[in-house]
Image (cartoon, rainbow, N blue to C red):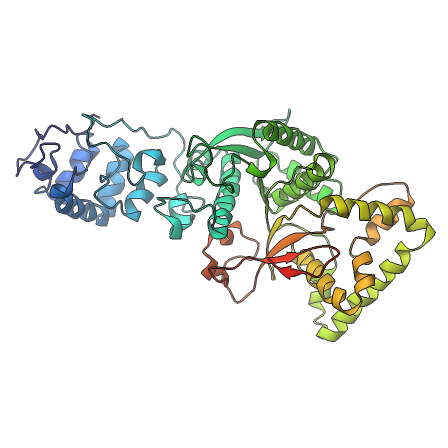
Length: 481
């Protein structure tokens, strides 16, 4: 399966030679789609042009072949070939998608990569593995199409950072599924990351992964991560579903910190920060994975003062909010109910029995306040509705009853009960600071809990291009971030 010679002595049907004597593009141009596809399928040719003199012929031929889905698919499947244009030609989205779907290294098809002065191009090989027969989890179908083909990442763009974090989280889930993990790499390789390490315990249970940025010698933008630690969401189709179910149980009982996978993740974070810095290590997670990321982020901030950029997609929060919402209470009644709850917590927190617990929570809030995790939530997702109400109600009540709200927001009824029995627990949703990104039900028709929505463009989520989320702080009025 040799690549086409670039000397200008093209094989096959003859035609006008390339004026630059670099390729056989002109010789291939007269061939019809069927003949060209057959040549590619047989491993004889890779379609590419070398310069402006061949631009028209190459573009025309590539577009014609792409329009023939059967020919393109057959050629790529059989020989591992890609349809390729040089820097003077625009790589179409379809070309990029074909190469990504079939697992060809995206580094070889990056727009602007120069091969003009080399006698041959490196051979690309197809990955081994069971082919995916559905559209689910294919980067070319489900990925952020508004960012492809990706020529440059704008690390200063919240939209780009969010989409990349969500894609890596999804790739982590795909990686954990052995039936189609061969299609996982495009979810991080397209953004110049490589798999650094899978997060597995002694039980070989894959609950996350570490990725290293390899796009440049060193990250040039201050917001570029050197490493990303991503935790996958719930996978009941996993070969060990009971592990996920047990972790869900620990989320409900606020006991996720008492698990060996949490300990392993915290140790890995410490090692990464030693190699890089806290500002360049991202935490990413969706659903159950968001719970892991939240717990790890809180722990390393409290214990080590590691202020890690943290992306939490649809983070679970056990609360009564879904029940309250189902009651369809009038707005005033609902606000009065929360006001009553805050007043009760405030008064209990002042009692002698709760004095030590209250002081401990205030100290924790002081330590955590510099950390501002990013919470991406949908108002119709019952899994994370508790986070929405926690922050929005505490803002409202801070205006109505400021002293009560500032004291009560650090307290939890469940933690109070635990403290009476000598247990020291802190609800993970009790965050002094956070940036909340909320999507309303009018924004799109995607599943409210689906990770896919979070690599959609701002416009599709009902946000402006300059949207910055809602920043909530402690001991000060919430402000727009």
